[in-house]
Amino acid sequence: MMRSLFSAVSGLRVHQTRMDVIGDNIANVNTVGFKRSTVTFKDIFYQTLRGGAASTEFMGGTNPQQVGLGVALDNIQVVHGQGPAQPTGSGTDLMIQGDGFFRVSPDDGTIIYYTRAGAFHFDNEGYLVNGDGFNVLDTAGQPIQITDMASPDTLPQSFNIDSLGVVHYVDYQGNLQTAGTISIARFSNPAGLEKVGQNLYAASASSGPPSSDVTPGQGSLASTTIIPSALEMSNVDLAQEFTDMIITERGFQANARTITISDEMLQELVNLKR
Image (cartoon, rainbow, N blue to C red; front, side, top):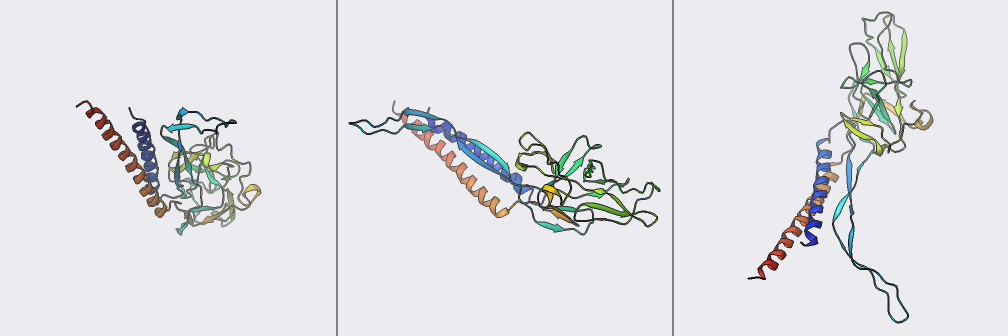
């Protein structure tokens, strides 16, 4: 069989994968905190028809003759660029300005996920949670709660979250209280985080553990602040995605055409017997 057939099939596969990624990017163009992904390809192995040779006293050198055997997926990279801000007017909607991720947990902090989506709210027990009910953690790794312990059935009606993530509220006696400071996790390689869905990431061997600094405005997070009453929107650029879509479509068509032409050449070979 012709090598071009197998090369073209590999081209169809990787272009389909790239189209899948582009489709996911476009589908999440309005998803809070979403980060777009990009796809890169790489050539695979080669069949060497003739090796290279050095020049001699009487003859010049020759270059190797090799035929490539297709393309493979190189990398699917998450681009952690800052997304645009969308003011919401809700005091529990938070946006990270700079590096880092909110830390949330489905339990008491044993399991920790990371997110840029700051669409939070206080539940009926005064815990600051995300849309799936995961607790937002403070700098001590504990859930943040504003329930007045002196009157546990009453939730404070007045609260404020400042740019350093400190949660203030007024108790039933009118005294200003502090519920804690929202923590921020920073990774040296955020692209290595594993997407787990629901706007959440999990640490991986590639991302490494988060930095020991978890307080906004301090240490390695000195340039990181929290913007209240705003959300970070998706960093998907539709113009870029549609351009990539056109390039991907043409690449897919070119590989499909290669299969068609290779088939016609094989047909001509078969017809030699007539």
